[in-house]
Length: 301
Image 1 (cartoon, one colour):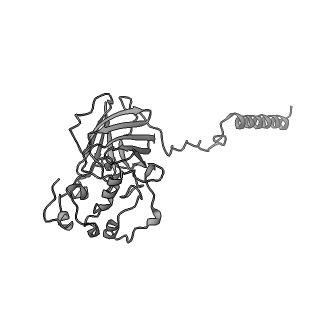
Image 2 (tube, one colour):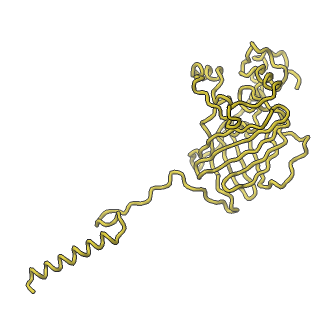
């Protein structure tokens, strides 16, 4: 065999091997000197587990889907004016009430009438007259805020320890400790708390929280949506993945409602630095608010 024939056979073998390499080697690394592509990180990674087997939901969570009125999702006129935003655009009204289907709170007739009469804004609505009781004054006047409104009032931090889920807010240093023990009985019925008495359990990646023993000091939004001390609620924090949560709360209140109703909101995990701390959100009770309502002295509870 002459040299030229030998070289041709060697070339044929090399070509054959190269073809085999293209067939057998996974796509993406067939070319010499080309870097194999790495899998792009998941946009919404799945949940991991804590040491005691809970879905790991720790971090800061918040929603941008709600402002100040449950039935419209809109701010009140006064807040918009104070913040220099001009008139409220009512064309963007979107109720966050998912049940009933009309997006309205199913108040009993007397309760619906009372809600209309409540002066809702910080400086009062003079056309509605002065409030008749402390329950008719916006709760922030007294630095009060309870559940479920805290969940959408501002971002909150979730911390987990074995057997418990803990939630913390900047507002008034509020915190909530939820024992994962739904068999433990609630407090005595005469014990009423602004945060209520919670019992939690895991249903897959959904944290189900049953809360009773609520007092009637807070509103459900900033526009006079009141409730009674008979209110109970069942919350479902469904963590779709490590960055997305769907929040649903069903509120039952036989004293003021004709039937339970449900609020649904999307939440997302906020990006925070490792050394991020919750700051103090101080509130000074009163701040001339009673005078703004035209009250010589606070009405009796």
